[in-house]
Image 1: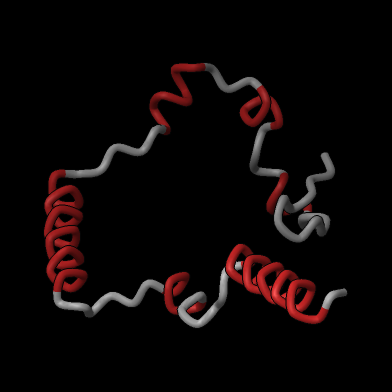
Image 2: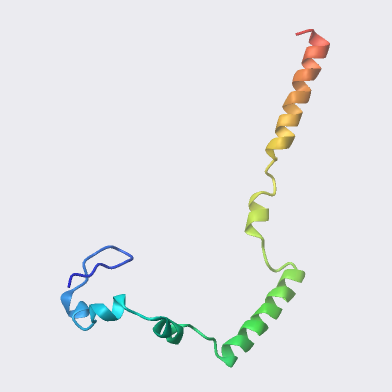
Length: 98
């Protein structure tokens, strides 16, 4: 059986592929999928809650930088530019008679 790596699309060596039965890969049942489903342990859930609380504290104190907001901090929205250009054109038309 020739197997291809799903990431780099290179052919996998035969010694890696020979230990895997092709039927195991194709014919997985819902029971198999349910057994493979990740369920976090109580320790992981507790750590996630602590990290969430820490994140909220840092967010409230300004320790978290919103990259999108910072990236667009000095960006002038197109609506404002269009409004300013339209107003300038109207001003020139009225005052210069064009």
